[in-house]
Every structure is written in C-alpha cells, then in structure tokens.
Length: 182
Image 1 (cartoon, helix red, strand yellow):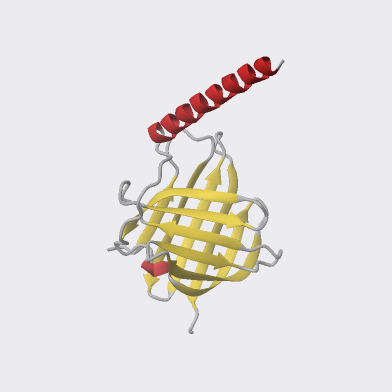
Image 2 (cartoon, helix red, strand yellow):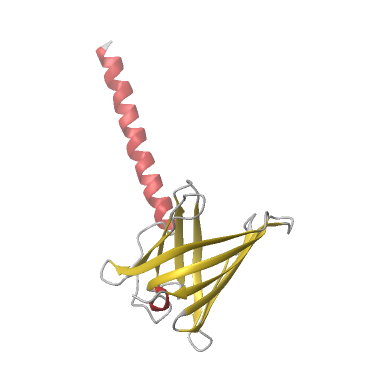
C-alpha cells in the first residue's frame, strides 16, 4: 500500500512540476512577467496633488457626486498612488498609475472598496494639448474610451464611456477636478 501511495505522490509531484513549467512558459509568452516602470515623461506629474471632484454620471442613472482625490509619488517616483473618497455611498478607490516604457504609455489600475476594479491599458499623453487618453485594445467584449484634459495647472476635465459588444452604453460620466490649495 505504501508503494502505491509513493507512486501516486511521485506522479502528483511530477505533474505539479510540469504544470509549473507550463505556467511559467505561458506567463513569459503572454507577457505576464514583470515590466519596468520608466521615468515619467510628464503625464503622471499633472495628477499629483489634492483635488475636489464634481462628477456627473450620465448613464445608466443620472446623478451628481462630489468627493476628493489625492495623488502622490511612490516607489522612487516610478508610480503615482491615488486615493478617492469617501464617495456619497461610502466607497473609496485606490488608483495606481505608471509609465510603461515598453508600450510608450500610461497604464492605470483603479480598485474600489465595493470590490470592483478597472484596468486601463497604457494611455497616451499629448504634452502639447495636455491630454491623457485611454482606449481599450480591439477584440474585447466591452469597449471604453476615456480622456482627461488639463487646461491649466489647477484643473482637470475628464470623460469616460463604456459600451457593451452591441454598442449599448453601459456607463458614461464626466467630471471636473479642481486642485485644492494646501
């Protein structure tokens, strides 16, 4: 009986090792390996600071929200970390952004205390127009487009629209952020 158990354990161990090799190979192949955050060419610095937000949800249910955001540099200025809220429903968000040198853009991650999260693949920063734009890659079931314009050092105007694969608007919102005096 113990030899049978030993053979089963040996097979399980062998299968586990093979699975680890396959997963590591796939991770490398699909680009899940760690990337390096590059020096910010300017698109992150505009977010840093304290902001008062006025958000207009246009769809699915129109409403207006007001709350605050704070962004600061973290991890040797390779990333910005933002905190938003509390919102009127009591939720808070944590936001992280960086510059992805390999893709030449700015990915952002938004995590909510409601349990939802959003990944924005690398956005583009147009320094001359002072606009950051995100658009999902082709082939996804959900399509989104977002942009934030910085008409001055103390103002940010943004818009976000998310559509399902049929083109039906699932969420649309616009917001204005005004920098707070410290």
